[in-house]
Each structure stands twice: as C-alpha cells, then as structure tokens.
Image 1 (cartoon, helix red, strand yellow):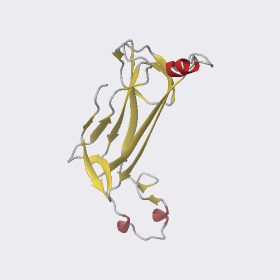
Image 2 (image 1 turned 60 degrees about the vertical axis):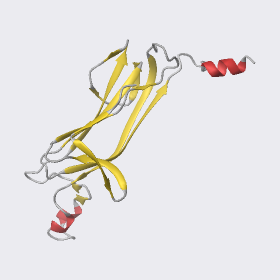
Image 3 (image 1 turned 45 degrees about the vertical axis):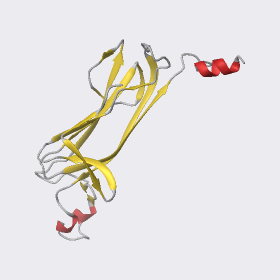
Image 4 (image 1 turned 60 degrees about the horizontal axis):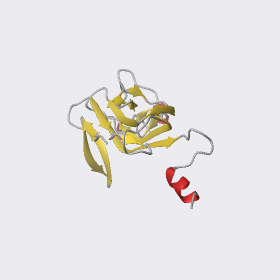
Length: 169
C-alpha cells in the first residue's frame, strides 16, 4: 500500500499526548493516510462495495486566552468554549477541518473528494485531513484520526474463502 504523509504540520507532545499541530507560519496543513484495501485477493483486487467511515479527535487553539475576557459572568463569557467563542467575534476567523478521500477503481486513483459517510465501490481508499487557519496566531491539535472500511457482501449468504474451506471439512 502507498504511504501517507504530513505537510504543514509537525508531530509534538502536549500534556503527555502525541498530536499534530501547525508548524511556523503555514496557514494550511494536511495529514494523509496510506492506501487501505479490503480486497480478498492479493493479486489485482476487484472493486468491492464498502461502507467508509472516518472521524477525528482534534480541537482549535484560539489565540485569545480565557483570562483576557472582560468578566467571567458576562454574556460574552457565556458564549466561550475551550476552543474559542461559539459565535465569531467581529474581525476574527476560525480554523477549518475537512476530511477528504480518494478512491481507486480499475487501478486508477481518482480525484480527492470531500468525505461523506456511505457506500462506495473501490479497490482501495486513501483519506486525508486538511486544516486551514485564518492567521498564524491560531492553532489546531489533531490527536487521533480513525477510519473504518466495511466490505459489503455481494449476496446475503456470502462467506469468506476461509469459512468456505472450513465448512467443507
């Protein structure tokens, strides 16, 4: 399988947990997984129907510390979370995160498309997480990225080759 990669992000440890975070002044960062295949045959796998799932554990690190808020009991403070304000403040932006996937069909990798959970026909799948930030004052912390591919049988009673072998004994 093809290897993954990281650009615009660096691996670091925060509070004892390993994560990816922005490097320097770059405003975009990408984490790409290696190619994942669920084909039953090692040689020229055929495209299979599969359910694709992906999710992340990450958060935005807002440049304004909680201590800089006017008062803790104010209405502004009520709109504040660990990641920053619930409503964008005038003149401020927010970090974005997008999960994208690339499907391989007939041994040809397609274009990157925005991830939507669902059923796809493919030989292999690559996933990536793209981050953007409005200024270098903002940061993101990507702690975990999970994906799951579930093969959908062609028929209701289909068995794997191992199950067929074992049941014939």
